[in-house]
View 1 (cartoon, rainbow, N blue to C red):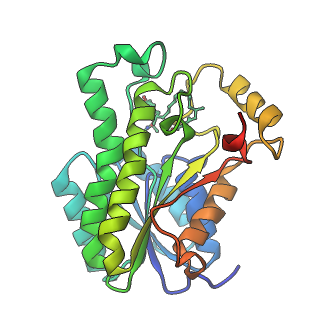
View 2: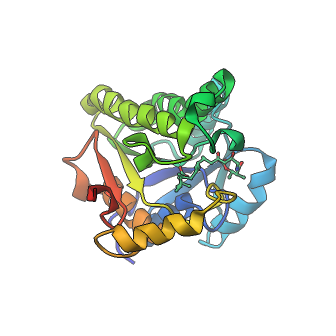
Length: 256
Ligand code: N5H
């Protein structure tokens, strides 16, 4: 336990289950004394998130938010304002693409699959930043999750790679806009981790094995390592950093 985040209200968007990177972030922030607000998408996920949030003790704040609807994003942050007044951070851990677009050739990406991946995985950060900004009256930090497939061609990442490239650019443009309000915007580029989003990815074991062989640290990373980097990005320690993509990938991205 440390007190870096005592008195800070942080919104965590995108916990699906105990393996979620969002949950790793929540645990790191909780250990540092932050007060957490969770958003979830749809009643199906509410139970999961409620159970996890309750395990941290106290009465958790849970808010429904489907990021494909501007009204829901605005309503969610209006509710958050009612509950806590000021927020100091948002962890945006949301992405989606159709499974059938995550294999084979990128050239076959459909128009609607492309738009869907962009909408949920990149534009949602813009909508969230706009809704969160008025609540960040004491300054703030917004952290999103990206992946190397947005910088380079990674087999099968396809439409998600293009969405992450857009997300990375959104981080920079948002950082430029919101800096004057002392709001920082950064992304963590995590190495592959076995989460629900990774479920159904064929050859995931061989992807992890390649990381273990090639990454400078000769291992993969886990949710707690991403969580601790997010804690740094939410804390005073990172006050000079904005518009940045930090790789938490055991160094894999530097290798040829
Ligand atoms: C190169 C790879 C492997 C191939 C690509 C995987 C991409 C995964 C990301 C997206 C977000 C996964 C996704 O949307 C799956 C959905 O079609 C179906 N799943 C769901 O609906 C589940 C239930 C929910 C929780 O998922 C979502 N998104 O809501 C990349 C891997 C090596 C690394 C990786 C897995 C990256 C990443 O972006 O997650």
